[in-house]
Amino acid sequence: MTNLMAIYLRGFAVFLLLLSTATTTVAVEELNTEGLIQRHLNSIGTAEARASVKSRVVEGRAAYRVLVGGSGQIDGKCVMVSERDRLQALFKINAIKYHGEKFVRNGDKTFVAGTYDDGTRSEFGQFLRSEDIPLREGTLGGVWSAGWPLLDLSSHNAKLHYDGLKKVDGQPLHAATYRGKKSADMEITLFFEPDTFRHVMSVYSVRIHAGIGFTETESARQQETRYRIEERFSDFKSVDGITLPYHYNLRFQQELQSGFTKLVEWDSNATRVLNNVDLDAKNFETN
Image 1 (cartoon, helix red, strand yellow):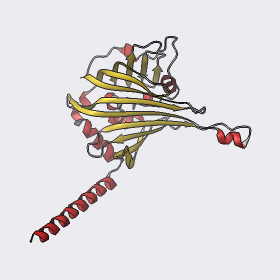
Image 2 (cartoon, one colour):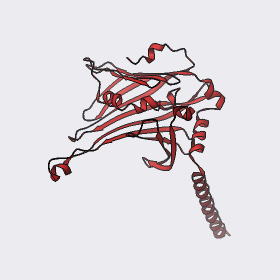
Image 3 (cartoon, one colour):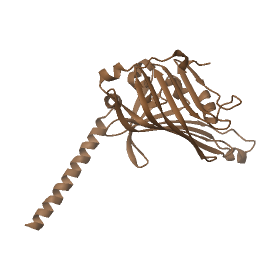
Image 4 (cartoon, helix red, strand yellow):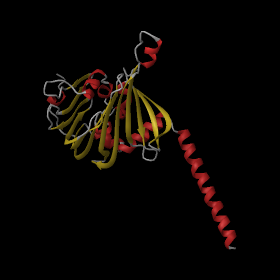
């Protein structure tokens, strides 16, 4: 009887595993772009809660780190203020010469501050100034921003295409390609948790093809230039009925034709989130 019971239990366990796999497969196959967006919006809050938020201020601690192409860490702070299609993201440190980053969006206008003592921009700032799609489209900062485009995709004249499940660091995530009005040269992929549909990652990548050398050998040695911005979000908490990440990691990587690579990150943890705050228009000046 004991052996029969063990066989039965093993068989039943296999049946449950197959049933779970089949259910998951069907759910993934049935998911489309519209379903992904709706589930993601539900993960933020109810329609009433989402509609009630007109502006947002996120304050927190931030650490700036050089991971490749140098070394070191400096602690500082971060502040993100947003209202509809306006945003300012400030990452500030007290360091010699370099003082952080300041990115501003005001409708279709963007601004990246020069944050070195001489008024010049960092590699990250210079790249975002020339390739301002993440800032102009409102995707930078994810749902920290009250102007997160997935809240009202049609008004942004943008499109999202569901690409299915993809593994990131060994974990399956729902992936979707984001295409804005002028994002042809930049690939934008948004990632969502498969169970909660929270937005947990964005990847922006640009590749500039290598030039042609004087000979075939020289041409073969030419390397393309690559740029990548990666955002990761975690530690979700509820504020005023809205679920937001309290941990935000922002990375910038450049790989130049010379072979030089630099990777830096801003690792931020929110300490205070305020919704529906009256914001000074000076926050969004683009000059």
